[in-house]
Length: 414
Image (cartoon, rainbow, N blue to C red; front, side):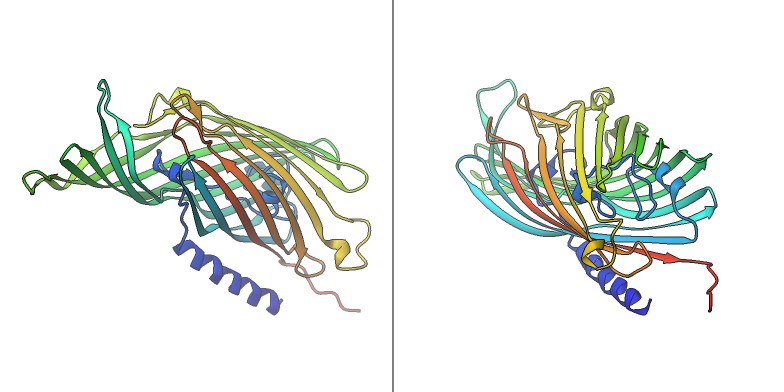
């Protein structure tokens, strides 16, 4: 137990350090609230980020609050993780590479009654870290253009409280409340002929969102799940400074300094996800998920793109020798997965889609508990080289530590 505590403390130190460096660095994070995070708990990253139908029996499943209804009694679950991402970007004429470290999440879950459990989690919701130089854009209703230089930092955090309750032996219902908050700093300069206008602004956001979930365990090998995220309003405000510079006269004019504004709020859409899980006789587990986000109904748009309805598909396989645990290697779980995201932004009639493949292992930390170190490698592509867009290729290594402690069980002596 002492070794597990030391291991957990060291791992928390690493991901806390990563949290201070948690950046997306994707050029697509310039849109909306930035690039949205995939905070995969346990081994979900290795099965293509699927798992709506999986119970929180051996690790915390953040994809469905109803999973907490199937949590084992007297077990206290803890999960913490981080990611290392190696990305390359190209637009046909230029290519650039970037590396970064991201904090993924920290969470805990424990039973409240024999039929219910609760979980608490902290994770990033989005990251807006980007730098764009000398981007030529057209002036609306004109044959002329202007040059945009932009740089941004910041993002939103997500604190969630989830509760699951089991009804009978096969059905569980769940409720999750997510609190979103954070700020994004955006510095832009617009160059038209000999005139340069610099706009420096910081936008502040806060809001809440509710999710409802359900899971049905048909038998020991088959389960179905559903999760519904409510549409919600993220309130926004900003502080802005504007300076104009004329290169012909070598003069600059301060238009405004730290002026407060009420700006358009950001709207999150209704999201509906369904999934199933099937265990075959050879200890092979298949999971499949589908979710749809109704961005069209939010009636909002971005300066450079349009929000459209989003579809996500995820599938994964995992295998372990549950009937033979005589050696350590027999207890290792192997996984692979795939996911495809159509994206929710359309730029010049082109979707910003994302596709990824993953493989991973779950390494047991100690006997007689569910504690494990989950390591996943993923390769993915986002965007495309067309219509002036950027294609992003990335290699991602996710490391999650899932710890299980047994509480309130009396020791037995021979």
